[in-house]
Length: 280
Image 1 (cartoon, one colour):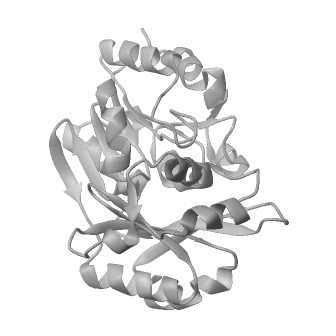
Image 2 (cartoon, rainbow, N blue to C red):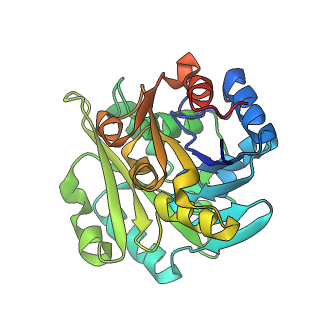
């Protein structure tokens, strides 16, 4: 088969949500695919800091911050943070309505100090992969610093938001929706209402990140395969030549995907690599 570019979401796809330890089966499949001449990229909503623990496994590049920061090998091919004014406007409008925020710079993540208690009180037992990632990251202190320590100098790539009611987002939407998508997911637990999501610059998304890698390497998009699990992967799923959703993933994303593979906890990625002929 021709050489492919493979793009992997992290939380809920390559790893269990919030983890930096992929199943051994997935790592072996990735190594075999690379040995066969394919290239494997991380394609994540995480910023570079939060995905960097996975770089020890030898990926060929990253699409970080949902497409805002893209590398091929050691070369940065795209870099598009918020302006300082946009970041300040977002935080002021969101905080004015009691929305809990984290801001992601390239090398650090900063969160409202009481975000952990908010999650424990509102997320319930059945959260999506983003909620679980933040809950675990806070519990394990994965380098999420207090927002009070952010001095405003490092550029912000993304603001992650959590609140109880959609109306809390209205002032920020009025100011920023022209330039930013409000990608919101609702937790379906009536006893613990919670909305979580992120502000993503309309200048990029995971799908356009895939296209930028293809253009840089001179590979047609038809020769790409993307793996995801939630609706923040939808642009990637719609862009790649072959799209794969995990069985643990969103039903809406499964409906958009060409293939549904077993869950991340059931060696799904390795099985899909084998079924697609990527491992030799």
